[in-house]
Image (cartoon, rainbow, N blue to C red; front, side, top):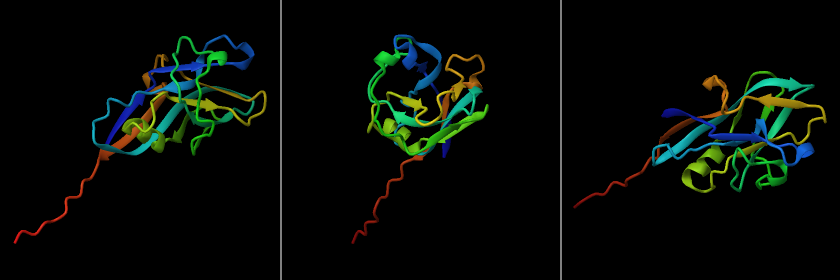
Length: 167
């Protein structure tokens, strides 16, 4: 099994209260998994977001697969791309100032094998109180280790070749 780290190539934040504005603390993240070797199985993929500030209780974010393209420098609340509308199976607990994680193996396998277009993810605060916020480091943050990333463990697909008895 091999391990690699994929850092977000783009990220952005939108705000309903400022529909045409674009911010730096992200809730949209784009990752490029095309550099993984061909013929692999994704054994695990863990999203890491470094929360550096929280307001009130912080949030537990639902993770959505984004289904349309977007660009870091032009996305706004009024131009948000579509998403699946249904959260992925895991949430990310961002209620502490810490390295926060969520397992997104199925999603990354789908990007890798082409089941899904790789338009990234959205982390949404669907149920926290109005004042609850969490701020994570962006892809431009000076310390690379604190940038949004996915740590991926993968291994070669196993091909079974049946035994043939030659008479």
